[in-house]
View 1 (cartoon, rainbow, N blue to C red):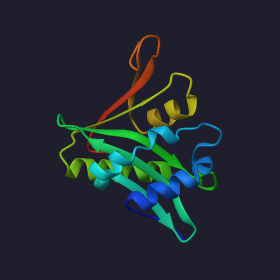
View 2: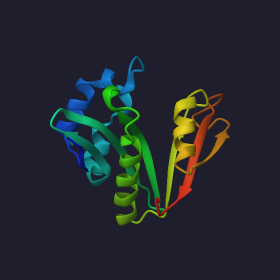
View 3: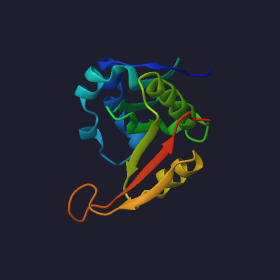
View 4: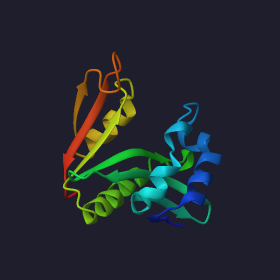
Amino acid sequence: MPEHIAPAGIDDLHQVLADHHRYWGERDLRPLHLSALVHEFGETFLAARAEDGIRGYVIGFVTPTGTGYVHLIATRDDTRGTGLGRRLYAAFADAAHRHGAVRLKAITSPGNAGSIAFHRSLGFDAAVVPDYNGPGRDMVVFRRALPFD
């Protein structure tokens, strides 16, 4: 059964955190899953649901300057390679655009080759920004204009 992508809530965040390893493997990104982002930007916290649970999700928000920022995006281990990540990004782009976004932005670490390749395949420009996350903590910054085709 195909998944349905729709806004999510705190209960969904708790479910994602309970199944954290299914989305992130050995990387512990639980501290980045901020409840405040769900409370304040619930319209742009989207979950892909199916009969077997949450298959993927995106947590993002729209800045006052019109940037749809993707804070986290993940697909469950048994759904990778199905195009779900692309569908989640498209759904987020639509939601962000409805809330005034004219561009998208995301970041990752320079060593995250999978994320870099994925974002480039979606038409993002990628640039390493020195000290983006503090002294000696470079990040790859992705940017692209909307609409998301």
